[in-house]
Image 1 (spheres, rainbow, N blue to C red):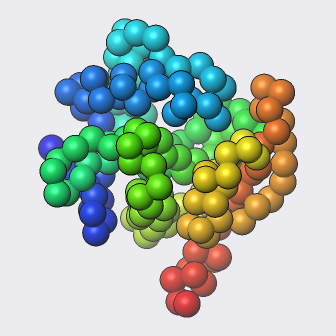
Image 2: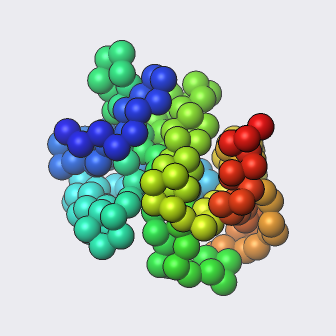
Image 3: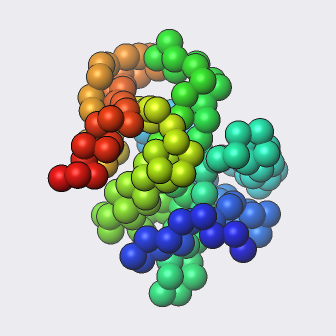
Length: 181
């Protein structure tokens, strides 16, 4: 198991083939997909393809979403991390996106903030990125709060597939300033 990051309560590691059932449970839950286009995964073959695509991101970009595992009982909670995004969103392409997704039973525990903050730090301190972006549907109050809490600044609203979303960014200079505070 290759652990990339460790927070106070969690490990962040590569997503593995053995995570299939946990990922299927996560992505087949309609409530988890409420703000993701309401299109939950319906079969494990789709989840296998997702794992394959994530492994390709690791190879192509040296980064991708990581599994989030509890330290106390080694449970898969969801995923979080940076992804080099090549699919155009908000007229942007070729940017690093911060993202997170957790099983319902782990909502409200601060895992998104804890892991996304660690991923942002990794992006600027290890990968030496200049900018990290994030987006959330405007109705997704929790995700919008997390993005602001970890230091991203609201830039603008945009439509993605007829859904109104918020766009956020943080650059290296602003991140360094936050580290000094």
